[in-house]
Image (cartoon, rainbow, N blue to C red; front, side, top):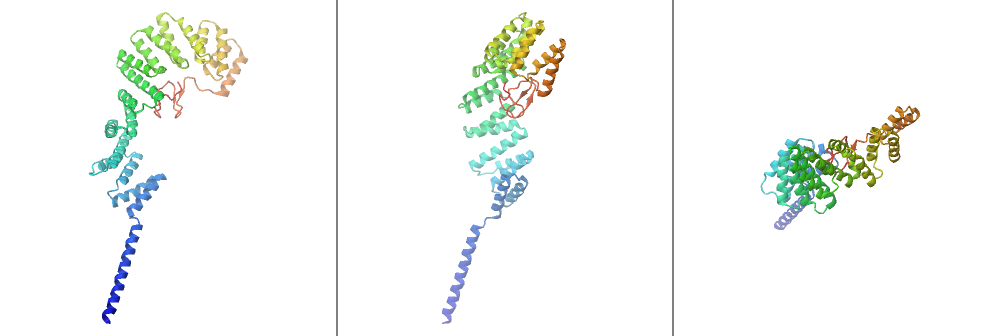
Length: 381
């Protein structure tokens, strides 16, 4: 009997031990590891924009779990965001040296390294990393677009051209315009070295991609002028007036000066009339003609043109000021006062200002790429 009693006691003890072990095992599975919990808190902090809390949690995570690659990546990204590029590069470079990384981890590390180099201005390193990424995956649009940006920033126009043409063949019209501008910028670089023939070839290539590429016509004319080929310079600028009348005012001064040197200044009026035939409300051409009228003593005709300009655009400042001068010269005080009052009411910006429609950057000269937001063709020229 004593043996049976002892056996029952032992059985009960065994059952209790098994139950305790089962409960402990179950509770261990449900309860997350401390590092996992901290990692989740860090991710939530990142999503809510609390970088300080995220940094603290992620730092705790990697101290407990050195295999959490993503936590290391995000720590480095926070350093980059705070402009601590040395720390960001150190973390991401150390990760890159680890053996047995998955392909996904390798790509994410390269991505972070590329961003570190881009934002710290280490363009040659960024280009090297991005080129390697594209070698691994030719369809990696992220790496491709970043590499195009780096080529643009470093003035590698031929490389930018080839890569953009390859990666964006499906976006035809907009792509053609930017490709044309690459050729223009390449031409400008060649012209700055005195290689005007090569520069002209680049500008002509630009026009093959976009026949309405305004700067290509402008700089093509300038390249001809630099080689004292004045007639061809004039033809280039006249072609701009024909293809893009609204932008022709950008070369009015160049045209007038060159035609004067050629002894053909009388042709300028014909050019302005041709522009107005294509674009009757072209205030710039009307103003140029009115200015010529004034120089020739045809004040009445000039005054009519200035009035016509203000019918089209009541805030066209050059016409307002010219009319004001005429009224003052004639002693027409009431009319002069009316224009002055109008100027105070409207306070227009000078017509020579160019404003980026993407970011609002203001320039007093025409630009083809915004220096602030890096947008192409954003000045409505």
